[in-house]
Structures are given as C-alpha cells and as structure tokens.
Length: 500
Image 1 (cartoon, rainbow, N blue to C red):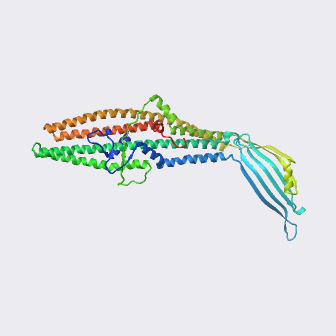
Image 2: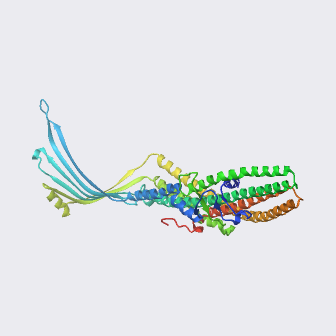
Image 3: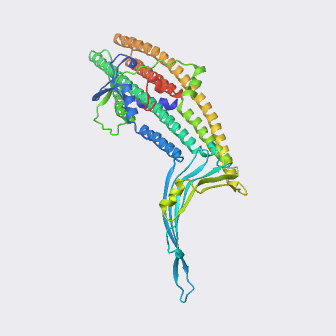
C-alpha cells in the first residue's frame, strides 16, 4: 500500500489541463505542454505487447525450449554409419641385418543404420565387408562379407521409458513452462501498462488541481487588490494573497516537471527508447474503472487454474518426477541381452561374396548376456537420493506458493473493496468542500470573512480533490492487480497471444 501511494504521489507530477471548477475525475485530460497524439489504453497495451523489450527477451525462451525438445527427441533418430579403413601388418625377418616385410593387408568396408529405441534397445542393421590379403598367396583378394543385425537390450538398468525418455519429458515440460512464463510476462506487462497509464491520468488530474488552486488564489488576490483600492480591506490582506499565489507556483512547477517523467515511464513500457524534452505529450482518453465482480469463494480456485506461474511450478514437479524415475532405474544392476543374426559370404571378389549374403547363405547368429555390477552403487544412490529430495522440495514449494497466492488474492480483493469505499467517501467530501469554498467566498465579498479563511477552504478543496483523483487511480490500479492475481488479465482485455 505504501508503495502504491508513493507511485501516486510521484505520478501526481504529470499532467494536462482540466476544465476549472469541475472535479478531476469528471474531465478528459488534454495536454497543456505541446499536446501530441491521442493514446488510448488499448493502444498502449497493443504497443507494449508488440514492442516491450523485456517481453521480447522472454519470448526467445519459447523458441529455445522447442529447439531443446527437438534435440531430446532426436536421440531416437537412426544414424547412417559408413566406414572405410585399410591396415597393414609387418613382421621382422630372421636375417642379419634384420629386415621388415609385409605379411598381411586388411581393407574394411562398413555401412549400417544404428540407433536407439525409447525402451532402451540399441541396434545396428547393415553390412560389413573385409578383404584379407596375405603374403603367402600373393596378396590375392579374399572378401568376407556379413549382412544382418546386432542388438543390445538392457533388461534392468536402462530398460523402459522412465530410463530413456527422461530428457524428452523434461524438455516437453520445459516447452510448456516457457509458454507459461511468456503468458505470465504478458500479464505483468499489461498490468504495468494499466498502472502506468492510470498513474499518468492521475498525474494529469493532480496537475489540473494545482492549476485550479493557483487560479483560485489568483482570483482572490485580484479581489483583494480591488477591495484595497476602495479601502475596504488592509494592505496586509493583499500581501497575504500574493504570498499564497507565489507558494502555489512551486507546486505547478513541480507537477509540470513530473509530467515528462511519468510519461517517459509509460513510453519505455510501450517500447520507446528515446525521451526528448521537446517531444509532444500524449493526449490521454479518460480511463474508467472496469466492472469487477468479486467472489471470495471462487477467486482462489480461478487463480490456481489460470495463473501461469502456478502452472509452471506444477510442470516443474513433472520434471523432477521424470528425473527421479530415471535415477531410480539407475539403482538396478546392468544386465543386457546381446544378440544378432545375419548371413555370410566368402569369395575372391566382392560381388560374389555379396551375392552369397543376398542369397541368404551361411547363416549365423549370436545370443548372450552381459552383467555389470558396481560394488557400492554410490553414484546411483547419490543421484536417486538427490532426485527424490529435489522432487519433495518442489512439492513443498508448490504448497508454499498456493498459500502465497491465497494471500495475494485476498489482498487484491480487499484492496478493490477499500478503494471503492474511498472513491465514494472522497467524492462526497469534494462536494462539501466545494460548497464550503462558495460559501466562504460569498462571506468574504460581504465583508464577514477574511483572506486567511478563504485560503484555508481553498487549500482544503485542493486536498480533497487530489484525494478524489488518488482514490480513482487506486481503484483502477486495484482492478488491474485483481485481474493479475487471479490470472484473468488477458481474458479481461480480450487479448490472444500468438500460438495460442
């Protein structure tokens, strides 16, 4: 509340003129300092969603998360493996001095599709050809070929979707989290626009109050000067009225300076990055307080269903559970089934040897098991314990967040109701203060009141009118915060984000 009040007081510096003699809340704000283009709230929101720099930064996370999901899924795409190698073997002859001579040559050709399945099986499907050439037969060609497949299937550790799809599940949740983060950033941006726009309107109103208060003091000074000329009042009344006008000039100057500062804050929010003093000010359209229907029993449920930050926290638990499931699988011993089947060829030419494989001659197979058993399982136990604690931490964090959201929603509801009552009370006070000024001025003209008494009721009128504008600004901002806290900002302003 203190922070919001401080914003109001700061924004009071900004402004445009309003029609004298009327409450600030009933007037349209028009710039007195080089009035520029009309800027509606809808225009400001649209510009912010298109150009706000912070929102653009957050938007990149959506593309990054989708790229990461593509990479995670890509681990199950097959790969083409092609290999060509040549080797030679030399031996030392039993001569003096010793000589080296070549005894064997080997050329290797490999072409295969390799990959992994989501349940852990790895495969190699293709063919190999070896050309063994020896010295004793004059290095004549001797092609040995094989065509078939080999597989390795984990049976314990590494088996199943939990062990192999953890990164995909984490990346998929990250993609949804990035969407939630972008939506939350959009909600925050729209809320900030409404608050800054309302601050600027309030500042226009406050500047109008300062101008009207100075105008009333100037009128009193002129009346006193006339009365002094005809001898109905003393010179001290004239001096007192002049002093009042001079002191009010300070407020006008302060509010005039703040007009640019408050507008610059809004300009930055809608994506501008140059802030020149001679730039025309926006002409604002009077901002009405939206209709807000508070339902204390339903609002919290709506918030838990609609708030993107809460949904992102729930998705974080999904990621933790995927990590925990993979870590639990790592506690198992590694037992793999290995097997393969294919056909062989052996001939002096590659064509003949390959044809034997194509004709399915000379079948061969292999089958067996491989066991790897860590002696302590320290790494696996540590990973599983950390994953379990992180998951529990996330769940407790979600409960804490639920409590925070409940408090935030209750505060937003209470602030909405309080500002409504403030508006009604301050508007009533304004009507009475206006009547008091009229009555005191009539008494002054009749000679039954003093300059000091008129200045006091005028100062009270300015204070009450300022309070009316402040209460209206508080009500508008309370409504914006209320929609933000229940996650309905975009729905209220009928905003549909891209890719939704």
